[in-house]
Image (cartoon, rainbow, N blue to C red; front, side, top):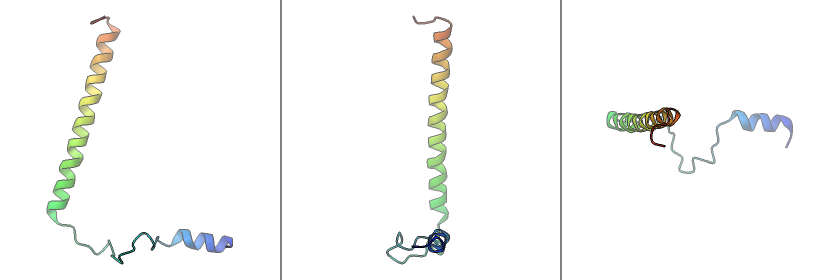
Length: 68
């Protein structure tokens, strides 16, 4: 394989990954799918925020010697 062939293979999308022949750019996405993804993303962000909050509170309490 030459360098030109390597560059061309990088520029083209990977057709082998789509073995069923589905063009994902033309598959319609419903509003319910988008809403579900948004809710899932929000839940993950909230859980991560709670974890950070608990860790910050724990570090703050430990630095003042509370609970030792």
